[in-house]
Length: 225
Image 1 (cartoon, rainbow, N blue to C red):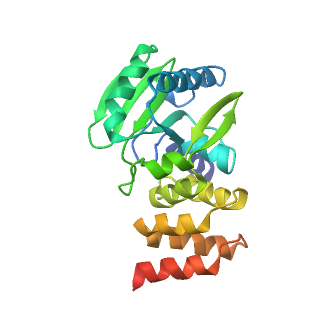
Image 2 (tube, rainbow, N blue to C red):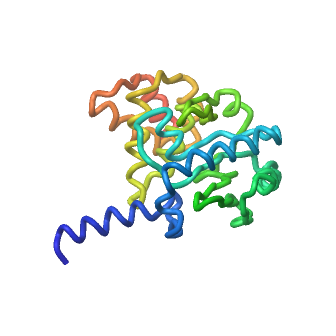
């Protein structure tokens, strides 16, 4: 196999996989750019009408807080106790739904767009009151949506990063580059995964992004003392 073909296969492997390593079904790998914002609008409207808390993670949050990039699906981060209610709310707005995995993930589908309803992220993170209070509003194609705070997204990206998802590392670096971070909050929340976040922050310093030395020291002590 030629180097070019190998490179093409490698790009396809990244494109066709979700952060958890599972494969994106072929019909959801290239949602129409005109349809995607409409489905996002329907999703947000369903949750707002049902008065259910959520914050976007994944590619949409990365675009709103760091570096722009296209995404194939909508990643909702929700409370575990609200997950079934959210499926019901989406069903009322014409989505097909499934209870995919009772430990962390349900799914909804509309017009070839996939909505992942995530209630436990990699590393054992859950949407809590503090995350909801700190969620930010960002505009996407004229629609205001809620995304997790940059500090929370950075931590989640550092934890989920692996060989199959190198984009998460670069998404996290984009957040450091683009956001005015609350370093005290990040330091406290990062104690759930100090080695992962520490490795990212040390690398960020190595490419001349600003990271306070006190945060590095604190996470090092949390990881190794």
